[in-house]
Length: 68
Image (cartoon, rainbow, N blue to C red; front, side):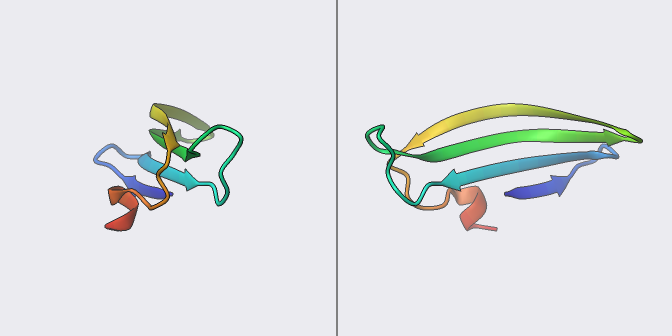
């Protein structure tokens, strides 16, 4: 998972990629990807994800993670 702060105080964007080590019962299912932002203000936090994707036959890290 990659996380970074933004120009907005208390706001952090993230990119998560998960690759499962073994194929599941679903043909070619290999993992998930998730993007979003967490906003933290005092004792309050809000998680807004902007994209979620199931991946199939992707057994290598994506460019965001690979180029980190």
